[in-house]
Length: 447
Image (cartoon, rainbow, N blue to C red; front, side, top):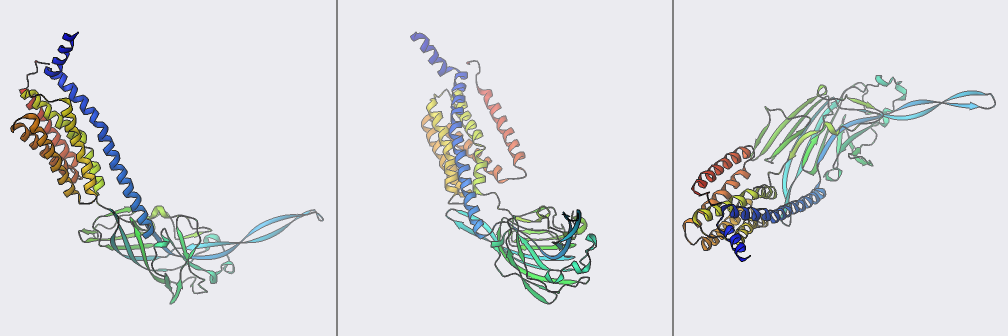
């Protein structure tokens, strides 16, 4: 029995296959704490998202805004029949019903100046903005021919002006619209829908039924994430200027290429949308539909933040742990130096500590500095530890060079966006080639 145990022990100490099995098992075990680290990164990222959402809600969320729209009430009549028991006949009665027509402007010119700022809470920060918006345009003809109404049933002196926005609490000024040389103040109206409504008092016969009605107004509004408009004009022209350097133009319409400019100092963009580019007309009867799906504008995206970079880095954890253990395994096989499984495990834990250091330091420093500090600490620790195991200077220097090159390679990949896959594939191909040719020196006869 003792002889059998000795044979098994000798097999583990001398067999290449046994060493590979042991190191492979340790590698699988190390995936457990690596998974915990990834969960920690996601938890911190979720915490950041919650704090940012809370800050944005207090400052002002995404802004969708459109208007002005003229709302004109009109009368229609429904026929009701009642049965008279005495005469045994039906009598007709007509009940008056109040409906509303909504007329969109013929032209709408919007100019918006978007100034951004960063707000902080503890270790978290977010980007918000204040937009100064000017609107000008005109209405031309209010056509009721599609509903065949007599003029007496149109209540012109009770017409009002409407604006709608997704972010009522972000408005920083009293909105006054100037129309036909008269000024009207828009006040909030109770509305349970996603969009909040602002409505003026009665226009009191200021409309010209068949003539032009010009308007102008200014809005100052706080928001975050995005600023978008809905092209309600027969011809809608939107200009946006901002000091933010990372815009994302989205929605149903993109800005004109010849006017779009993006630099480190900000961006300028211009949109032109015609009625023929939309799927709705210039007037609605009975109700105003939800037009949010036609919105377009700009999202003020934040470039990849430190949590996203840390999460991307952790995805290469399997690669780093696997290659590092492989380097030690090749050194052990080639040099015949004994490395205990416990020592492999300690090296793997040191590699995992890199990610906890990275996420904790990056919450207080920029990502480059956090990556540099974490990398130097882990590479230095493993190099010093390998010197006590390998008993010479040549192999620890090989470990130092391999780890330094590997961490530098990973850092380059996570900084790239368009070429990350290409560079990563080429790098892995080179690493595979190095491992393949290094393994030629191994005597595989002792399995």
